[in-house]
Length: 439
Figure (spheres, rainbow, N blue to C red):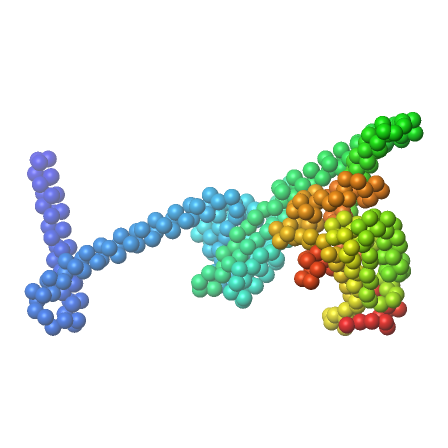
């Protein structure tokens, strides 16, 4: 009985398969009848080829589906977030990292909802719209403040510093890669705090060492005292490094530092800085050439701006070729904005030294950055007593001071002299400077 059932089932299966083949042949015959006038035998010859083509199309479809699944698995495993929206900004898909970054744990892949309903980030929405309108990749950075329905969980949810890179896709879709930069910022804050604490602890012993060295200087006779003098230089270098680090850390922690802003006549201030540095300039037979208005009044913290030009002119003296000039060119620019024309004071400080290498230019304002040896070591470094001791923080401090004043600084190489070209801009120009010169 069991054997009879097996053969009966086998017969039914074979019969069903034969019926399918007959139906397929009839379908292909009907399909080919309007397209050809050849005989029935010719149409039968085409059927095997069509079957092979159909099988190839099925295989290609399977391969494409497998590739798509592979790419989704790669994106899902990637250490950066990725999301994709359609032409109406509806979320189509996002990987696990994006769900964690944007707090989308409750979102399900089968859901199709507006991204702004799921993620209350207008910066992200604006970036996507901008990418779609311009049809070009865009980047953006902002602080994301996640929303939460549960009030009890709010204290545990922290804001994140995000960086997004978006690219346009076909049919109005947009893909966005998300990077959580908050851990990196936290590490930098911990590092800065640790260095700041260390610098505070070093100040007292360094001061004590300097007092001991001063005592030895008065008690030793040549030639032994030259070793003490060298020791004094190194101690001063360490003290200067510690003080500069503390100053820079305070500036970065408080970008809007409290400034003693008042009217400052800039040309006389630059002349005063040059008088301080003139003994160093005379060793190299350097001169200062000024061009621009006779008087320039800005609203600034005089001590801080003095520090800016002290650092910049000291660098120019160190790296200028003997017998050359350091040029300071000033001019007032009028730029148009919503409130009308606003004045900007531009100061160009140009030397005739070795300049910066192209690799170093993007990094010259980074703390402790040491690039081309030609600009990190000069002949004066070894024998200059009383020079401003270099520590790799001078330009970083200059940038922070100018930012606190609402200004900016840019480093370039001058096309004519080949030396360093520092371009400063101030926005707090006083009215009595505008009547003299502008362009």
